[in-house]
Length: 122
Image 1: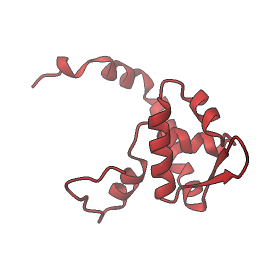
Image 2: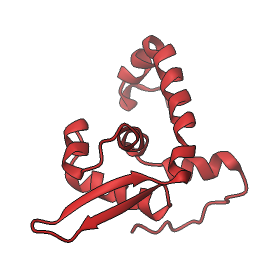
Image 3: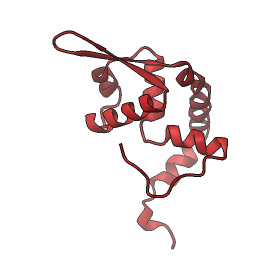
């Protein structure tokens, strides 16, 4: 797993929350697993623009942070399923509020995010 060169100061709740949710697809993965999507292939179909490698890395990080658990079934071919832990379930209201906020401000945000970074004033 990637190790940061400069350690975060984890003395603030919002920093802790951002640390465990840091990653483009983590909140989407948690929401999908909460809806019952548990197999890696189904999660990839839910987020087709993400590479399997990125999803696997982010699933591993979610597992490392204790937000999901992974069950590997001893069969051929091996089958893997993910479940939310109690800690992961406790994040669902936060993810729901983030989604509501994004939907409420969609027009402004889409307009601002459509501008490339190269066009921003220095």
